[in-house]
Image (cartoon, rainbow, N blue to C red; front, top):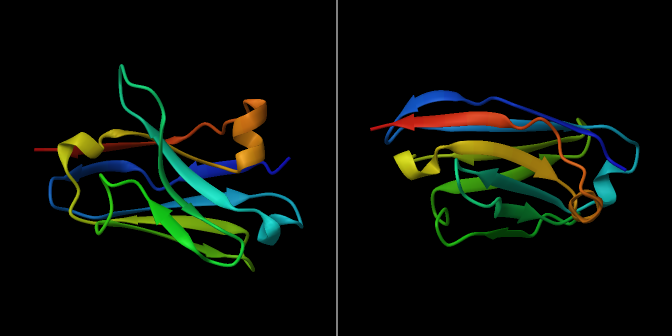
Length: 116
């Protein structure tokens, strides 16, 4: 199981940008599709973006055109560049693999707060 540590969150004004990072353990990182999720207070966790081992990406409609997921297989890191942030983007952001989601493994997440 890939272990992950998310960081880079913080307080940002609406319209601003933030880049999240997710450092993953394991020599097999490059073969895993990676995903970013978020959970806002009182809401269910939702899938925000995903990237395959080959670099293909997918996004939730709510972030399409504003967020960009990328990965660096040398550094075992996946990123989430967030632009044009909105107050509704406020949430704890998590990265994970599909396998991690299946077995209920989650990192500690990183809090992003967007002020209006």
